[in-house]
Image (cartoon, rainbow, N blue to C red; front, top):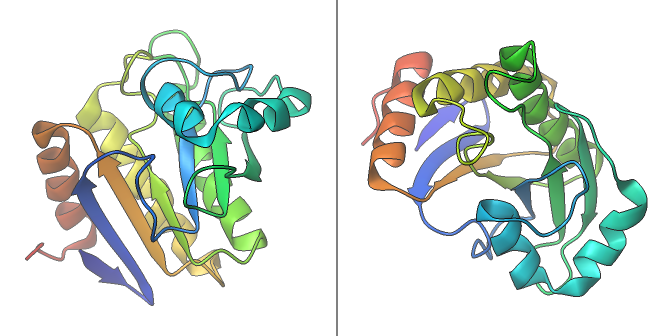
Amino acid sequence: MVQVNTIRIECVKGNIAQQPDMDAIVNAANAELKMGGGVAGAIHRAAGPELEAECRPLAPIRPGQAVITGAHRLPNRHVIHCLGPVYGKDEPAAELLAACYRNALQLADQNALHSIAFPAISTGAFGYPIEEAARIAFGAILHEIPNLHHVRHIRFVLFHDDDLRIHEQILAELTGKPLP
C-alpha cells in the first residue's frame, strides 16, 4: 500500500466480487452490460439477476465510458461498469483505457463514495498486455487524485500472482514509494 496525498492505493490478490469493505467495485464490462466471462461473469453471478435488469436501460456503452448501478446481492453499495478497449482494435487504446479509470473515479467521487476496487480492465479476453495496462491505469489514477474529494481508498484486485507483482512494481515505480 502507498499513500498519495490523503488516498491509500493498494494491490491485493483476490476476487473482485468479494470486497466487502469497498463502497464500489468496478466491473470490466461488455458493451451490453450483460453477464459475460471473467470479471463480468463473477460480478453478475454474485449480484444476481437484478443487476442485469438494472443495467439493461444503460446499455450499450462505448469503450472508455463508465456507468454506475446498485450492487444488489454484492456486499458493496455500487458497481461501476467500464468498457475497456479491445487491444489492437479500439483506438486510441491507451486513451480509452485511461478514460475507464478516470470516469470510474469521477463517478465514485460524484456519488460520495470513499472506497473503490478495480480489476485489471481489458487485460483478460480483451488482450491488453498487463504491464502496459497497469502503467496506464496507475497513470490515470495518479493524475485524477488531486480532483477527488470523497474517494480515500483505491484497491486493485488481481487474480494471478504475476499480475499482482507487476501492479505492485509499477505502483512503486510511478509513486516513487517502495511497497512494504
